[in-house]
Amino acid sequence: MSNRREFIGTSLTAIAGLTLLPAINSFANPGSQYKSGGIAKPKLRFAIASDIHYAQPGTPFEENTANLIKWLNDDHAKNHLDMVIINGDLVHNRPDLLPEIKTKYLDKLNVPYHTIPGNHDFADAAIWKKVFSYEDNYTVEHGDVAFVLANTADVKGGYVCPNNTFIKASLDKFADKKVVFVILHIPPIKWIKGEGFLDCPETLDLLHNYPNVKAAFHGHDHALDGVRYTGNRFPHFFDSHIGGDWGTAYKGYRIVEIDEDYKIYTYQVNASQNPVLNSNKL
Image (cartoon, rainbow, N blue to C red):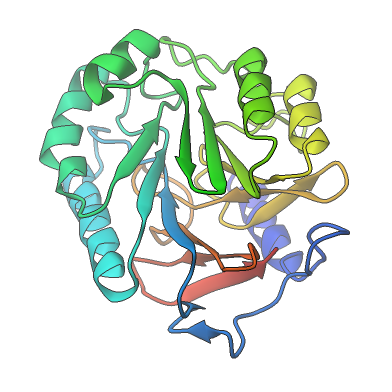
């Protein structure tokens, strides 16, 4: 297992310089348009993190969670974040602790935040609404940018394909938006046989068939911190992990920035060691 995940991490780093989509700009390292690792005045700037695994035995989960809040608040103080997305596995098999992680930690973020369940949250629409005041499938709008967030697990931790009826209705509603992102904790394709993902061809078709859907963002596999592709170079971005007992040697999150021309820049932050790991331009 460790060898396979090391191979995956190496492969992701190796392909980071490939063209993203035929009609979109190719990947590029931050150039003169960047200030301190980002666009000088982005139209929208947000962070996405996943896999906190609060309450996992044998891990410093309280320290990990507190670090996340500090890192994101520090980032916001330096460069301004419009919002934060926590993409699944907030807790580790303890849905009863979702109120605790919300009030004790997430509510200390100095920016608006949004969450979606992962397979270790053991949560459905009723649980999520009780804790966060919204269900496990919902949308967020920021002007001409929209987000579609959908659950990919059941209350027993089983992997499920997302609600494609909900996703299609949302993408139809956002057909006139300049940029749409889809947030799914578990990716909808098994890139490697036996890998802990799902094959959800209907979901992939939806992602591929709406031109304004620019990328999907995933958590789940703590060893992944780069990009993979489906279809005609459709990007799926990962963000490492915050907690848990396996994955990349560092803890981190991903930053996404959109400029006035709706060009999209994203880079992974090695928050526990500070440097930017990789940067991409869509």
